[in-house]
Image (tube, rainbow, N blue to C red; front, side):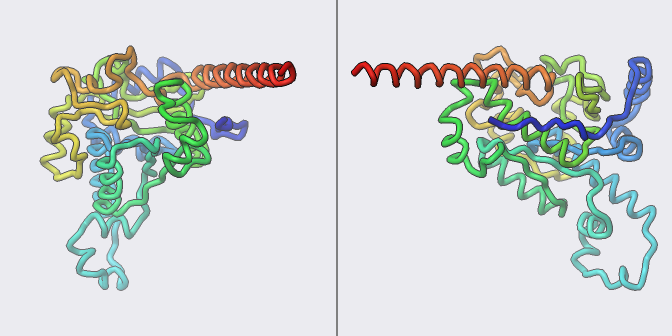
Amino acid sequence: MPESTVHNNAPSHPTFTPAHLKFINAKLEKLSPEKIIEWAMISLPGLIQTTAFGPTGLVILDMINRIHIDQQATSHHPTPSSSSASEDEENDPKKSAYNTQRHPVPLIFIDTLYHFQETLDLAQQVQDHYNIPLKIYKPLRCETTQDFEREYGQQLWETDELSYDFIVKVEPGRRAYQELNAQAVISGRRRSQKGDRAHLDILEVEQGTGLLKLNPLATWSFQQVWTYLRAYQVPFNALLDQGYRSIGDWHSTKPATNPDDERSGRWEGKQKSECGLHVDYFKMRAEFQATQKKKQALLAAQQQLAQATAQVA
């Protein structure tokens, strides 16, 4: 069973009263996504970005890249060593900027071990395109799908969906926050994705933990996201050209079935709109632990029954 990733020495998060948060959101609503991100990079300590390389996350990453390049250009003062930069760097502003200062917002990818190959290919392409490191988190003690299925069995998402979500997404995500001392997380959620996201604030405080969550593209539509990707030649998932809109694990993702609901291809036939990363962490952890205790009790009972049967025989 995954160990708890919340410890007493977890970083303290900035504290906002409801009135303060409402005031900030009112100001952020008037800003462009670029300005929201720029504000966050300056104002929010411990800022990270989590992404599964969906369209919105890629737009955010590209905006961070452009803001970083502009900041570097503004503060850069040529030195004798900088004049000897390679021709490749001079012709590639992304590489030049990132070589002078590390990427300002750590980029986190939670590898559930069940992503599409197209998603994994894109992860590598993005690293190469932006010349940035990617911090990858997987389920505890599992490097491959085979490792996972030896530990938890096949198709856990069918037999115990809550445990699956906790083990492959929630726990690795929380572990990333802990190890990186994250205090604020940039996400790619948008109101136009409907469901639980329809009334999304740009800046949220996670219940129970105090973690800040920033949704800089909350007001954008899918068409605005798509237009940006094309205009700035941002790498994107090849599955988008096959009718997919929201892309998660291969076993729970299909092309969108409703053109007005881009997440209609997720969790078909289930009353579900979130994977667990954006729900109450402590509530989900408690439910997961309760499920594990029931499983352990059932297993113990089965073993006792088997022993009793063997003795009678």
